[in-house]
Length: 423
Ligand SMILES: O=C(O)[C@H]1O[C@H](OP(=O)(O)OP(=O)(O)OC[C@H]2O[C@@H](n3ccc(=O)[nH]c3=O)[C@H](O)[C@@H]2O)[C@H](O)[C@@H](O)[C@@H]1O
Image (cartoon, rainbow, N blue to C red; front, side, top):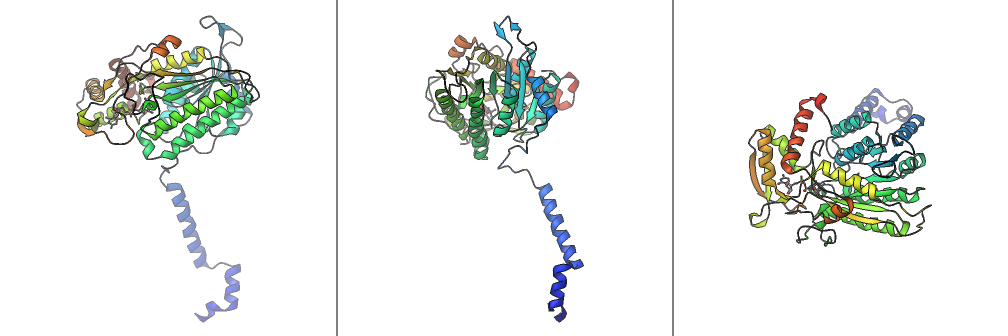
């Protein structure tokens, strides 16, 4: 229409939107809002949402949680006072168990976790609830948040950091490589930076992995064996972590102990691990894939029960020497250790499945598949001589007994029978 093009109409448009414009603008805005709130989770970036921390009552909770049961009192069994430990990844599988064990024996414990959605965050929240009841406050935040870490060290003079926050899982590394770099490399550096700057510097115990042995074919795997052929990006980030640990020990005098965990399983475990999702799928009547290596080689793991791992972690804390640096400067040589924490008894995955079938009283729908080229290795077996000598580490739970406890927990947890839930 000619009138639409008149200067008057143009002026009117710029000052007073027509109903048609209002209509289309509203539709457009509604569409944007809809897409924003209904978009699927971004699998390429599972970092936590904005941290929720700070304020007077938050600081008070940190302080109370970090306080050992009795200040100054010497624990006769250890010949020294109780500790204040910062546990990263405290809502995770190993982190929650270790945090609870430390709290139970009287140490002060503060947790930190970003509650990311790599696996069902509601499981992490349930773990946090139990920790909360035990008096462990888990701060919701990311280890890459330097301000938060520095704040925690301002509030508490932690004697130790148990660094268990990580992007776990061997096969997922092909789908989301960035998350491994973010958590296992950048996150590790961020934790070391905070520890280096803290005064006093804490001693650090952190989770490396059996996967660093990669394509090493000499078995059982000993700490001095080659670890320069990682088979997955996950393994490569853990191996890089061991190098980074060496650097911080060398330059800043941080006391650092790396623990190479061997396929840890048990109650409150990780749903992304085979024993966990096999249980779920067997109960649902869904088929499960059992991998086999080249030439029909059976795939086996040195499955290690969580309580044995916790003992190894706690013993590492108790034998850790002090860091030597202060004000970011090294004052002398500091301790640097690496230990295998395994079970020394590899079990084929097919045997794991037959144990689960008996415990669940259900036949699995099995299909045997060639192991995909996704970072998996055929076999793991820990030599634990060093840990048994220096940490008195001695695993006591075999796969049959450990899976029995896992299945009991699993059935209770997922049947909603939370009353019987114990740790
Ligand atoms: O010990 C370690 O270093 C690693 O242990 C596990 O990694 P993985 O041993 O691969 O554990 P699962 O993913 O539970 O797999 C266990 C076994 O089941 C096999 N599997 C897995 C999945 C599947 O569908 N079928 C199958 O046969 C795997 O090949 C493997 O031999 C953890 O997921 C890692 O985070 C950890 O660092």
